[in-house]
Image 1 (tube, rainbow, N blue to C red):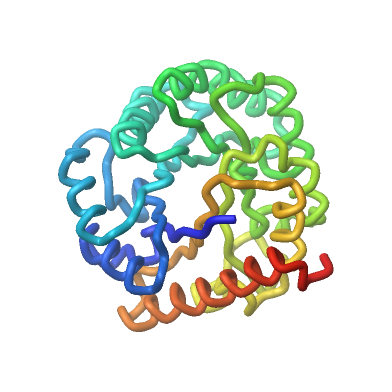
Image 2 (cartoon, rainbow, N blue to C red):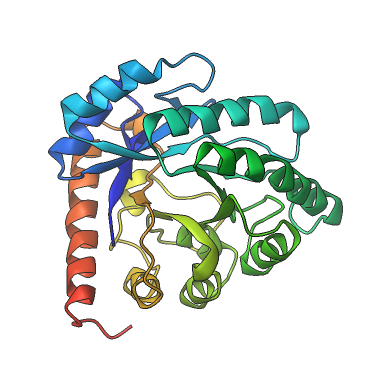
Length: 272
């Protein structure tokens, strides 16, 4: 398995500063944040891909994903999301991650998200990238069952699930069983931890893998058993309120913990 870092943790830095810190903490792969209102290290509408490629090369990093969180249930967002797909393709990234939008347990919202995926996934496939739709708290696709319904409804090409145990854990799902059920159609993985089974995620220090209560060793074990080989990126939010040394410490500790779990799994040393 591979391990990268989402630049959203370093939202207090510009793109060059974020990439420098991701690389310094030992990561070789990076997910670029394009999240309106939270962190836009790249923008589908204005970013020059050649400038980003130069900064990636300088940092010694490979861009594997773009996180372009949008409300896909609203068709007015589709042009910008399509631009994010083009940007990802020009950067050589494998996937563009987003929540689906809409409301939980609302059939109309679910249908709207399914229609968005059916519309956008062929565009992604033409560009040689995939869409990763996160099962996201408070949205139409929010748990294992709604993710499976989407997979049944929207076809198999050009997209898959962005698996994030911290969201599934907070809606009461068995996150290891969810990984096993979804793994054949997982397009990308976000990883972090949480202390409590509550909807608002806790502060950054409680999201550090290994500090919370999510059984991440079991999750990684499930991904290993199904030979998952796509992007897996640390995604810790709330970085804008951190001191620089705190954000770097979170990234470094997280990488060390996850790298240890992954290597132990590869050597057959964990029973999950």
